[in-house]
Length: 415
Image (tube, rainbow, N blue to C red; front, top):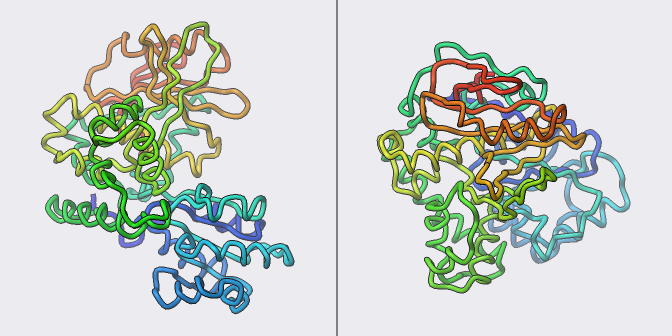
């Protein structure tokens, strides 16, 4: 599973294309996902530009003390890394963009979701294209583009033969996750990385997001959420575990979302005739980080069926989230659950109305009942339903009726 020395990021051409049209482009993502490497590569090749990082203390102080003068002194094309560390720069950037509509003036990165920061939001409407960069997808690690989503909407599911069988075939991959610095490392070294990563993010970026240096209970929040990853969100239950009220717990969850450590999957709003659950689901955004927070190694993922269900579903949901960033169809992602206990782990919907569904099972054998939710969705939607798959740990793709199939999990990155 050791990746090549240089992992080609699938969104790289998307960022380069955006720079040819938008006045500024901002790459958003968690720390240590490769944002700096990506923008440096683009600034050296596709879009030559000067590189500046606000993680440098002297540079950040200059930007904070005189943002207008700082921007005035920049080249016509500039990369500003970690722009959330000097949020007042956005007003100075806006002033320059307002007087110059040339494309590609700024390539920005942010390790906090600057779209939600009160000091930045609404300062650059219509002037910046935003692109998300997540940890490596498995396709990127394997030097494959990844077209699983597009295959489903094209009604052409991956036809896999002779896949490795069982949870053990995937456990180490899941426990490693997608962070670049976790790749090819021993379990012990990965653990040290994840420990320092959580501590650094909460110490380094908390002030940028929450405008405070410390929030009581926040350091325990990642582990509390990890125990509920891939489950319906309950800030009330989270608050009970942390000894805080519901409103405070909701605020804490939002902070981790803004740091790209947690992702909220909204319920699919349907008109299928059944009452549907309107509660979102929460996920830790990387399966390796999730395994660390749950104190689980590859062996435990294999042998603990309950934990395996959580981490496998989280792994799949995050792979789909990564892949949608460059998918030709680029669907919106949801989950579905109704009062009749029918559920679908991930529902994908295009703007034109086409829908595809993905269920996740850790078993190597699939039964007809595993398709209950997908079959219901297909029958209700008719031709709007493109395809539904159950991802499992079996050997080959198996048809299960009209526009339904069981597909080995490895099809996510091998297709």
